[in-house]
Image (tube, rainbow, N blue to C red):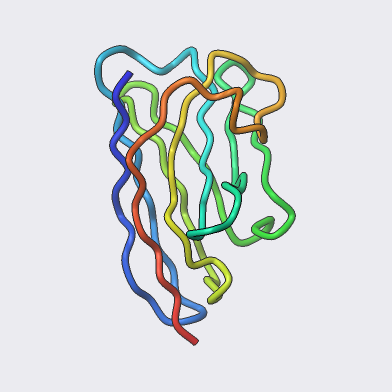
Length: 123
């Protein structure tokens, strides 16, 4: 599976962005999809995940109520709607897929990763 993340950019605090993750190579309908973010010099951080079977979603506490993850299996797309963005949300955002439904917040569970898209939020 090849993943391509897009939709990043620069916004002011309080603004919104919608990230997209396009998959190719095979259907990702049977994969859990996760979004992670990383600031240079820091550990990659879980943001949100959506399970392939139940469609259940999981969010990091820091984004709960502001971000929403969704998927469109028919078009091999996943999305991360980010609202009320804050400067601390600035990072490179990555999408990834995992063939499991458990432990969706753990990066090592994910098999394939996209290249990342930069999000910068100014105060």
